[in-house]
Image (cartoon, rainbow, N blue to C red):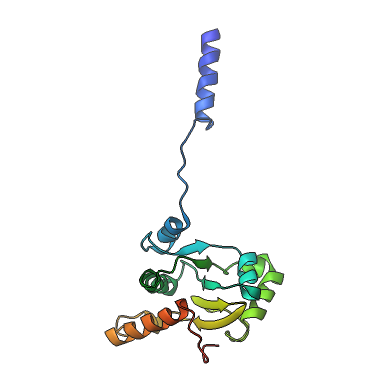
Length: 180
């Protein structure tokens, strides 16, 4: 009888998940690569709304607002990664604002206040990328935010060069007077 009880206890331990598993942590770049279907050699760092608001208030950095649910965000991530690699950019802060409005309306309102000069109707269009220097937005892009920009016909060699130049200027903190 003792053997049966011991066997049952051992079986319960294994079936209830008490086994030891080695879980590999993914880096930010690997996580982003999986989510956006791009190379794991990318500069994206997941961040939170508090960090984003701090950057917009008095920080310096590149903020990539996007969602992997939208093909335009994935396309933008490809080009931003390419230019970041060429320019040796190590960190681009990624934040998905999709659920912020319903989860934290106060912080959403604060975010919109910071971005108001660059957005229309108090609404963000994704993907939305900002170059912030000392708390001031100096460059901004919503490339790939509409279906037309995703078509192969739109993406001619000349247009791709323009897109890359726009992202290069943004990622290297070139001030843009008509971006916002």
